[in-house]
Image 1 (tube, rainbow, N blue to C red):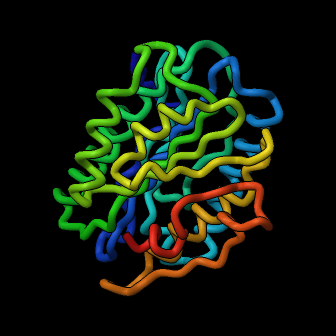
Image 2 (cartoon, rainbow, N blue to C red):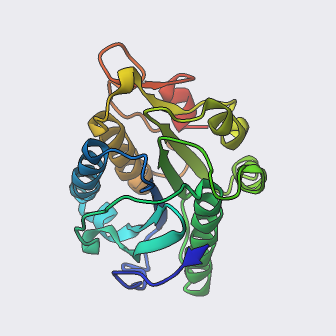
Length: 242
């Protein structure tokens, strides 16, 4: 089920003379998500904004939307320039509508893309960031979402960032990530520290959103190395520019 009653309403794109990039963040808030995990996610959403806004152009040209999913999918922060993203505290409870969250995320990205087209704004490839510690317990599978993700990714319409942590289901991750060769991000050792993941994601958004057309992007990070609690396959630089 999808409920579009955002706590923070949609805003139109700013700086319409610049290229824009949309980022949709989907956060699992089901009952299996621990308090420690949710506290870290809440803190890192604020840190994500801070890092991207270090670049004044990215602060205006990156648009963000945050949704949560448990028994249903909810829009928490509707589309806005990331500089105007509000702080909020997510709470957990209920089942895991992962399939619905991914479908809703793609729907919301399409809506923002339509706004760009209507205003003559050049769009950079959108990012869909999905975080979960489980599998779909509402629909029972992610087949519809996986098929749509595959179409969008192979059609060069978006990039998926999937982060699994805790007891997340690797088979589900593989279905959703098959367009990227089954890669995903994974928090190792049962940890609930997402700092490295959010730092990498935010710095990637900041770099990609202001890069010149055709420019190869490189982001310094420990993600995917022994120095980080977040693993990644394949090599991050090859994936980032793919």
